[in-house]
Length: 357
Image 1 (cartoon, rainbow, N blue to C red):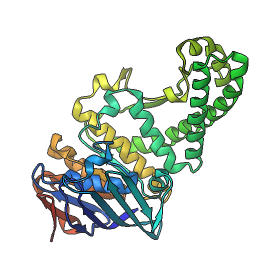
Image 2 (image 1 turned 90 degrees about the vertical axis):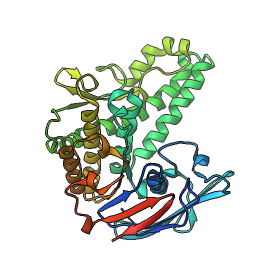
Image 3 (image 1 turned 180 degrees about the vertical axis):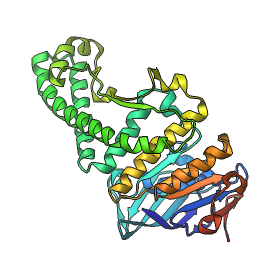
């Protein structure tokens, strides 16, 4: 995927924006508060239908405006598409090549957008929810059936949980156990196989960052090893009914990150954690590129906390993905060694975006 043209109006402080990015690097420069991150938000909306800063899409609309709009001309696998999003206080309308989309998954499938932002260390430091989302985003883009598998599992889980809250007997609830178990095992298999393949790309990327130790990446399925899921559900019925929900399963899965015998969060510095997550994300993008799916990578102010050597290593790693990349920063000096003559360079000031030669 590459964005050929981007138009934004009324989104936060952005007005009358019209740019034509390059296929490789695009540097977005400007003072803090100028609108650099807002421009990344607009691009994120093209791929995911929402901002990465706030799930309340109404917050995107400029004060005193009725709506905001984002329109992008994109290319994926040799075909051009036009994506448009208009958000008003009454709701959102998203169109793909002039036709309304019925699910955001249609948008996500067409244009994978990866994000590196200042809070990305949460994937290491915080709970498994972040790591499940990371895995599922990757599986979705390399396994065509995954979206259907995931939706089937979530539906069966909701039905079983409702039956538990209604105090159904174990015999009566078995109909949901069978459906949930089948979906769970498909979901578990897809995640496990994906992570095994991804680990090859992760190892290649980690070697590019001097000082970042080798990290062991393992998959935890979300229920006790050695038991098939139907048997586990039967054994847990009494405890699940008492609590009113299914306690264990793929919805409790995790991706463990360890350095030696210790959890990565207890060993790595904040800067190393960010480099590790960047490594994981870039490995995903590299894996998708190997399957002829190109990505757009948004990098919001990540270099600010890295020294010059690590910034250069990150830029090299980004370039090797073959993705289209948008990087924000306050000045060119932060990107020492970057080839600005071959990149798109944009300056943002008070919501206005100017293309620099």
